[in-house]
Length: 324
Image (cartoon, rainbow, N blue to C red; front, side, top):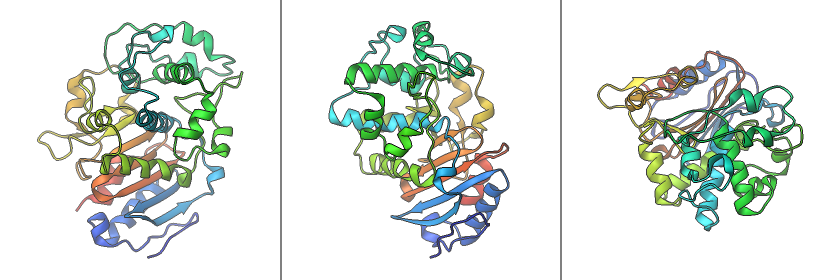
């Protein structure tokens, strides 16, 4: 077994039972990743790192929307302690009566508010939050508003700073990571974007998902949603993208990054998947510019792929890795 660290393209010898494919599959996947602005690539399988390539963690870009999934994992772990409940109603005026599950599923009825939160030089998220109002539609509306309200709800209901909560509940969110987390001009953390983590930083989160799903350590309500999706979007639940439709008649491979922006009917998502070649139980943490953490419980496997450029395709990469 060879572990590769560095900017050059190279392939680790990976046993066929681990991936269900020969060594050439990993070579194809690595080449596909490298061709589209790769920063780093890490494969963890059956208890060990079997492949690693890329820059030091300190040079990695912000992980953008993967931040949402990281916060979700923190919520799941907090739910296990009895501190939070997915069914509890938010107390924040912007979403009073909306459940935490609705916030995590992005079905809270809040407007996405991308420009309001991500506008250049935002000094204080507070007024933006105060201006939000849930219309209770229950549609899937992808955007930062759900997560920024969630941050306030955690701060209020748990009686702690967001920094302390992240360090306690989010795998990999050590003091160094939290210190580099994106904030508004007043120093308040964002929960929807901006964690600055490398592949090694993100690996504990992937492993936590394997444990939570594979050994039934997360609450049943969490595992059920991450298996079935929601009525509004069968391909999405609680901050994760699902491959549940793969292998079913009529399954369609879609590009997530280009599919977001306009509201789509539930029917659009019902037959959508990341890859027809990958296992159906694959869950994905997806960020802009080809940033990915794939978790496959049935294979005891996590793949972390970070990038800076456009053009990365889940379907192509996963076909290389798992296709025949």
